[in-house]
Image 1 (cartoon, rainbow, N blue to C red):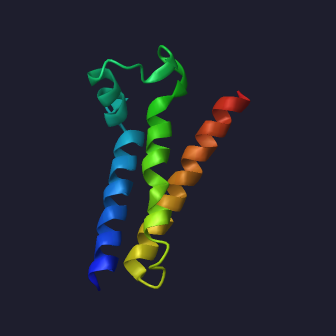
Image 2 (cartoon, one colour; image 1 turned 90 degrees about the horizontal axis):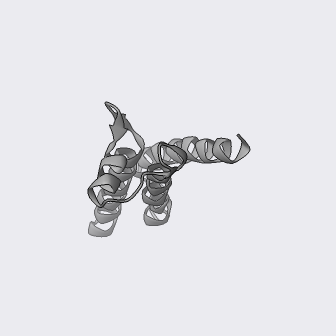
Image 3 (tube, one colour; image 1 turned 90 degrees about the vertical axis):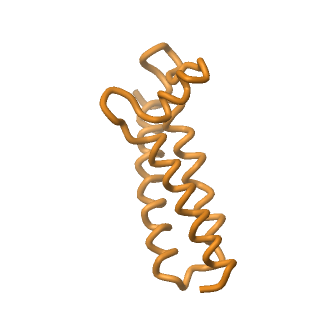
Length: 102
């Protein structure tokens, strides 16, 4: 594995990990919610309901995985990371669409 491919894999894993941290809930709130509260920003558009900004930030961190790994599609490890990112993007997109429908 060359330096460029290794850097792409590490960068995509970091982006994927940050995206997962923003999305998943630990206890009563996610890491993204805690980070928003730490910066004294609301995590939701309407107090405790509405548009969830942490989900959007998770989307922002997961999306670059496809851009970082686009040149290394023959590597099985990179393909595995891309598949996890695709599943997360699908789930985030469905939750965002559900918000606008309901």
